[in-house]
Amino acid sequence: MTNSAESARRSALITGITGQDGSYLAELLLAKGYRVVGLVRRSSTDRSERIAHLVDRIELVQGDLLDSSSLVGALQHAQPDEIYNLAAQSFVPTSWSQPVLTAEFTAVGVTRLLEAVRQVCPRARFYQASSSEMFGLVRESPQTETTPFHPRSPYGVAKVYGHYATVNYRESYDLFAVSGILFNHESPRRGAEFVTRKISLGVAAIATGRTDELRLGNLEARRDWGFAGDYVRAMWSMLQADQPRDYVIATGQTHSVREFCEVAFARAGLDWRQHVLLDEAFLRPAEVEFLCGDASRARRELAWRPEVDFVGLVHRMVDADLAAARAVGVARGE
Ligand code: NDP
Ligand code: GDR
Image (tube, rainbow, N blue to C red):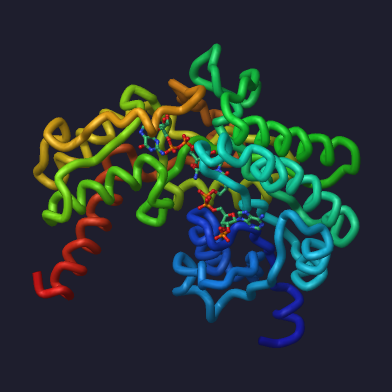
């Protein structure tokens, strides 16, 4: 690449690049010609499974949301035009067992990064991964950018802090800082402990004869589930807008965990009622019973629309886990 092409090439820093969303976002930005730099935590084992297919095309820099100087160093290295802050302790149940650590990563980590941005690259555009968990106990439906927050977990509380830190840095320092209020989004790369992937992995294990049961908590909880690949397009679009604004990203459809089970088991020719057991260990101290988002602002201003619907999402996840489970069976000569 020539020097002028190199300097015209836009550069992005992604925190949380080893996570579900980080891997899809890295793919999207590479396809758009970006130089992609990912912030990774030091680990004694390799955690780059989701980005293994990209490692030749991205740069990884070590750093941690707990450590301000490492964030300054990462920004100095990347000199980014765009920063996507996806890193967080993102599993809601862990936020009750590790509430202070969750606050350090998911809440104060945002301020650490924003302060580093202010020092190193105040003209860069900043995306904060906010969450529908901030709505928590909902009093209006569907939820929009103006629905009041009432978080129901230490995770939700931490995300409200990160959200307002982003709004505050935009208003105080004129940063192009935006917050995407994303509803649940899933994929075959979703972490195994989240309910959708737990179900698709469970279906695959049952269909291939490795187990006979799947233990779950609250089957009546309702979520607005979309596909992660669609949602990272929205993140990018928010940073291309003329003005920095916060956006709800959702499908506008809500389904229960029970409905997810029905569709997932049926995909493998199974009846969920014969396999799913209620296990109180998976109930939460305070539950978010119902979420359904209204993404009208994003549709209007960003021309964003999801392409994968609920049934398409469930089938995609079950098909991927079934194929992987069968491949393991073949390799073992089963
Ligand atoms: P994941 O849990 O899959 O990924 C989280 C990422 O954060 C991992 O790369 C992890 O690294 C990294 N990380 C955690 N702690 C630190 C730290 N202290 N310093 C640096 N990196 C850290 O999450 P998702 O991809 O699903 O979600 C991305 C973001 O979007 C998160 O902030 C999440 O809270 C938020 N969000 C997610 C939604 C969803 O439905 N998926 C909906 C709304 C918001 P490592 O691999 O080392 O653990
Ligand atoms: P959530 O996702 O808490 O919405 O947060 P999760 O998939 O963990 O739970 C969704 C709903 O399913 C119910 N549930 C179970 N959940 C899990 N994990 N395991 C079970 O066995 C089980 N049984 C029932 C839960 O009670 C809950 O109501 C996700 C994360 O990605 C956050 O980081 C993100 O901010 C929000 O989505 C939007």
